[in-house]
Image (cartoon, rainbow, N blue to C red; front, top):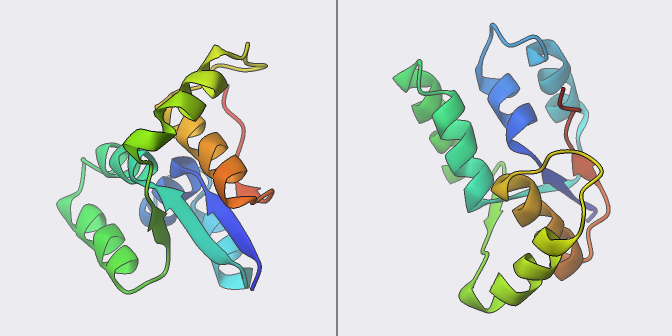
Length: 119
């Protein structure tokens, strides 16, 4: 089965009906056939973005619990690789969630990432 990493932006949009990319995120998920994988850092970022509505947070966590997305571990052994990723000059501003997905991309050999651009 194909695998794809999913960033916190689309995850947030999926569970926030007022998000400008909500319809897009719903369409992506409905048409997706790949196993979705994210990091615990992206889960944290999504929960923070959904902090305006406890039910949205609970729906998101239930969705994960039901197996809709796999939360891949970022372990202590990954810190050296995370350091190397962080050392590279970025072409756009990155945060820890972005860096953790970059790490997982290399670690799990996944080239597909579901995300949208930042301004």
